[in-house]
Each structure stands twice: as structure tokens, then as C-alpha cells.
Figure: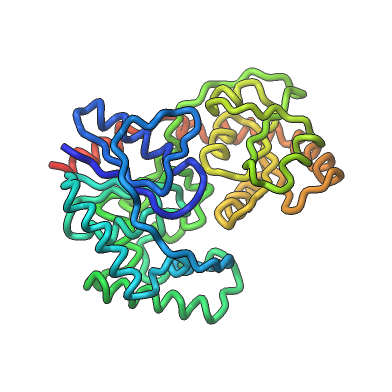
Length: 349
């Protein structure tokens, strides 16, 4: 039996890595994973499974998003003609593949296309799995009037195209959903009042080992190759930055420097490592805000050699806080894939 795994919005490798982890378990259980992904550039892993092209989404180029609806509008979900064509392209894939189950990670078009056709499991970061509400809450303030108008337009467009009037947040949550994150980091935590919509799953690489380091151990960095200040950070702070699986990269480190990607962030939390975060996008900024409240990170928006050195020293001073928080979060240092697989099997049956 075939399972279609799709991703269409967002950057980074986290979307692919989560879907690959699920596909590996599905294959062991006798299912055939078929991928439809935004791209297949996964470092350190060959891609042995069948691949399909994702229906392209237009991109408006607008940078400022205030709600999840703004993000959808950026990709044409406020345009009846564009959305109709996009969902039809996904439905053509569903007809061709004939999957018994659809699994999505930040693929709202595929979720809507599969509505009423194929059982759908939605996974992803807390940012990519919106709350089950009719009107999405603001992600940054103040929210301008044009953002409110875009939200109305997105809701009306989707209802017109798919002919369903249920709350948009519930539609985008599919038949089941799992949030690869921690409640403490979730910007939508207080809008997930129904426990069925608050199924957290930590990170797919858990459990992570205990670390054994000295307080003045090595710093480690993972920064995007196109990040303008990358060389400045590396030359100023001299961290190790070779690419390794995260549990190996963090095993003997006393400080992590990165953009705030969720898997890296939670990996550091579970291993008790203080973090210096250099956020680039809204999701990373929201994660940094949550971590600042927990007292285990420092953050810099515009790095200079001077503020890098000062902030690195301040981050090292958070080691005891990070260690104590890791103890509090140990319930999340386990793998929830089996629980997710059970939901998959229930949906297929």
C-alpha cells in the first residue's frame, strides 16, 4: 500500500528529515512511501524512494507576515484561480498515486486537496501546524488592517474553492496531527485547547544521549551558507562547524550557535546546552523569544565582532540554567514515532 508524503512551503531540512523518519518506519511495516517535496536536498542521506514533482506555488515576495493567513496569501491562497489550479494539480497526483494515506509537513495545499478523499495526517513544527481556529491569531504586533483583510480573503477563497465551511484551522489539521515541538516553545499553545489538537512529539531524533563536557568546552555552530554574517561569526568565535548528525555534533559542546531551527533548538534544550541564536525568519524569531523567557539563550539580530564576543560570554554564563531545564524536559527526550505510526495504521484501517 502506498503512502504519499508531501511538503510545499518553508525552508530548511527539518521538513524532509521528519518525513524521511516516518517513511523509514512505514517501509519497515510494509508500506510504500512516495514523496512529493519542495526539494530533495538532504545532507548526508541518499534518497532511495519514489519522487514526484510538487505543484508549483506562486510567491508574491511580500516579506512581512502577521498571521498564518498572511503566509498562505503569500503563496496564492487568496486567489480563486490560482488556488483552484493548485489543488487540482494535487488531486491529479492523488488520482495517479492512489495512496491509502497522505502525510504532510507544511503542505496546506495537499491537506486541502485530500479533504474528503484520502485520510490525512498532518505533522510539522508548531509554526507549520496552525491552531484549529476560524481566525488565526497574530504572530507579531501590531497587525495592520491589510493583514486582517488578507485573512478574510484567504478564508473566503478556500471556502469557495473546496466548498467546505468548517473553521480553516481545523481543515488544515487534517484527520490527525502531531506537532514536532515542545509546548514551551509553541506560539499557538494557548489556542490548542482541545487535546486532540495538542499532540506534541518532541523531535524525531530523540532520545539524545547525556553529554559529558567541561564548563569551558568547545562551541559548535550550524549556520546557513548564504547567511551574510557567517564568516564573521566563524572568524570571531572560532566554533567547530563540521556537519555531523546532531547527537554527535553536540556530544561534547558547551555552547551552540545557530539560527533557531526547531530540531537543533530542542536538541540543545534536551542536552542542557546554552544557545546563541542568530534568527533569520519569523519562526526563528518566535522561537528565540520563547527561549529568552526560559533563560537559556542569548540572541543577536545584527552581529558585529564586538557584540558576538560579549554575547558569547553571556551565553556561557547560562550553562547552569540550561542544565536544570534539560532535567525538567526529560519527558520529551524519547521517540514518539511509534505513537505516530499507530495513528497512521488507524487512519489506513
